[in-house]
Length: 122
Image (cartoon, rainbow, N blue to C red):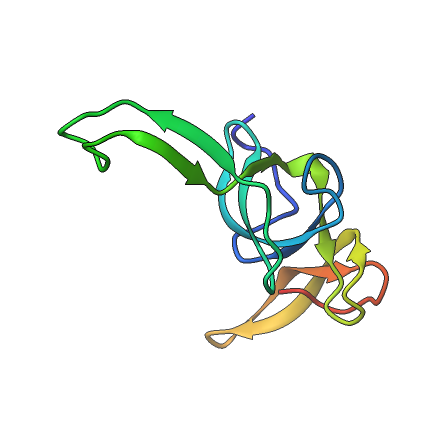
């Protein structure tokens, strides 16, 4: 499902709803659209349980000596909720069309908004 529209973008502040990091707030670093998984990093000093990966020694790679590497966790996109910009609580996302002037022409552009506070996110 490569063409699927996702409700989360890179840089969004999200709330983790399930798993080891349940109840923590994080920021989206990258999105893998093919597997619908998101790489996140903890917000404001909150440490997320990372992923430990065992790497073989290899002269060509970034770790020639090998060892155990700690990586940022990936979470399925369905287990994340946006953080409301006004209250800081988890909220759902809606979209609305807003008229804007772009290079002399008026166009309708989609804008994401928090359902709880009705405040724009983009």
